Length: 387
Image (cartoon, rainbow, N blue to C red; front, top):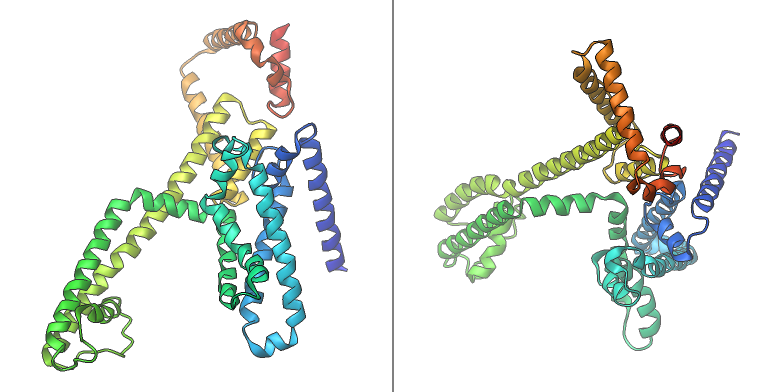
């Protein structure tokens, strides 16, 4: 019974999301509607999130099936099921790819119908989408010409599609861009240490193990696994000097090779903090200007999802900002008496009346009266000031 009720609730939520999407996109072009389905926009609503979850689920199911079908015992039993899943996911991913290319013109930098779409098709996200479906079609076209079994491994690139929906990759790229100089210096130190270690290993072990330490490039393999504290054991020094050098190099490698990991962790955490502070400042500015409309709330929700903020985090940030603004207003009027507060109120009303009745403000008259751009209180105040 409980499972049945959950299904009913899920169907009801989906139908509600579809109705909301239809209502919000009434009068818009088909391309704009497709763009809203695939991207977080003020008119997307919950339906956009449902589509994202469907694609993520399809990616995960597809990757799991690709992995499991390499097991002969499982493949023999579920061969037809694996084939059905492959075709179903390919259809879904192909439709998604075509829809994204078609609606790319809604973004300003891809606005040109032909050049814009071509420019989008060579972007990293579009190339990931293309590579995820290309092996299937190449396998059909070239099956009788060449052995296309090697193309199957490229189907696992579908897992990269998930990065589009998490926002984690964008945060990571920002963190790397901020710390690129420090990371480059760390990488240079690591490379220098690998070359020095390989050179010492070659000089100390070449005579004793000419088959393993036959050259410095060959010794680099041993240097890397030693400095990284992996130690496979397939190559190891046997001379006293070589072993002594390995002990020293291993201790140095623990610190040197740990630097990039620490830098990336710190940079990633700082970037998340910066993004969340930016979100908080945007909400603070909007609240101070009285722009928390229904449309703006959807934009805030989409931004919160990108930053991996839970509803509790968003509520906490909003309460914090409202509390700060409340005390800011209280502090600015704390030293005023009743007559002074009344005079200040009259001045602000007079300024608002002059702004609303000015000729320049007539340009935004229709925007103020729109339900999606303003709150009921803002429209009521506007109408009262116009009288």
